[in-house]
Length: 471
Image 1 (cartoon, one colour):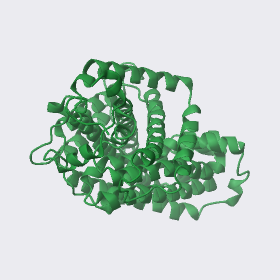
Image 2: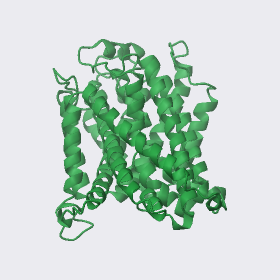
Image 3: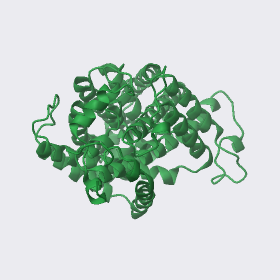
Image 4: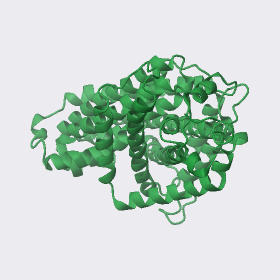
């Protein structure tokens, strides 16, 4: 196959169906409840416990409620597109696989490389945030760990590493290697705990809401609401990870769409309710941007609630970390199965646990090192642009697939095509352009490195170019 043909060669539905029958595939053990819990586990975390403070204080005021609606709406457009693909192509890989089936090998490589950035940096960022909440939680009992073991050496001179961040990543890695069922069970327990805490915050906080604090409702205008939506978009990152587990769903045609849309809807409702409570309890100008919920309850003399909130934050962020780190090895696995990464390493499934254990261990080691040694804040900005890029690609891919494979069975059909995909492209593309130029520069550098790897290794080992057929 000529290089020009290989770059645009798409993976046929026949090859995708063959992968589902292969012995080297992942175990189907997840039902609709497990998938929905994975979605909630990925979504509810730092967004609800941290981002609400700064977004309300600096961007939207009480209009933060609308910011969450706007961000959720953009995700819903993309979510409907993800759901159609996940039901039609229930294999590992998420947006990478969808791009391969519609846009060709080069586009698939680019989006796969982008997903590696998204999940890797998001996992490191979340681990870093988890360590800070753990320190706050331990501080309630008068336990204070030495600074040189809880900070990165670039931010704090003399510090060795952020040891708690590294340890939680390694602990989660062990759980992920053992198996998807065990991982899902652990995640479900964490999700149940943080949902109880979020409902506690809403129920107790609503009794202390002063409607006067909601005036003016839009102190920064609708532009502030839009900027707030761009900022809190990070709070929704993770729902797309449900689609990476399509190959492990018992009935992917039904269960994956349920998991995606149910988790999105539930989390949006909870986000709006928490934003209403927070801005109703404390005037937006006085909201603490570091620990907004805890500080709001202290403001009303409810110091005992801080323990429950801190515990919920630690549990909530733990489940986010688990789902993100659960998803990245599945992308590696899908790319290796296509020959674009070394199959002997990234494509190996454990004979007993049926998990991509080598890729999982590598992911855990790298994420632990980054979280322990580097200041994460600048890198975390790359997560948003990487995720938005993936959403735009998936929305475009659904539109393309309707033309290239119009008769393909679609157990779940995205409604109002091409309107919904077009709105997804415009909305998420618009959020991409609202980000600073430095985010685009970092994304360009990352993609350039990926292209070097593709042209130096992947194109020579592509299964599609050496024996596979293109549609």
